[in-house]
Image 1 (tube, rainbow, N blue to C red):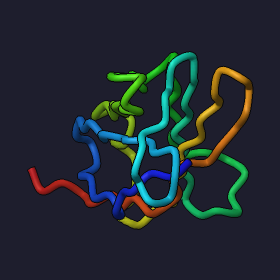
Image 2: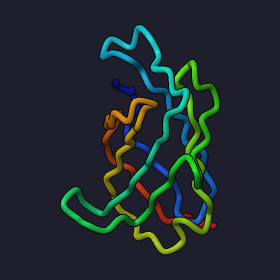
Image 3: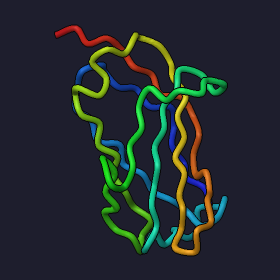
Image 4: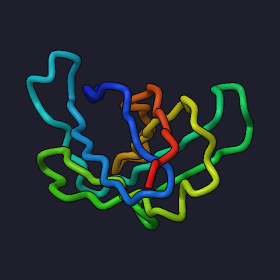
Length: 117
């Protein structure tokens, strides 16, 4: 499974929705069916850190919006990032499908920028 997503830029202390589309193949020719799946979005300061600075799951902050089309929304609340420093963090999204198979569908950087207002 793959998902195409560029680096994400967000302002600290703001609400945000990250739209996620999961594909069944690298060519992005078909979408992955998320029926019965669970998702985890994890943010760390760096890959080698053991502690997460932010984590969202399908039971807290991730909504599968169209399972058959592989679509989900990750909701970041303003209070989730209030204490974040302005910097690049690493993130990934893992899917556990209905057969209990675990896949990392995307891994990239998320830039948190201090808000002006």
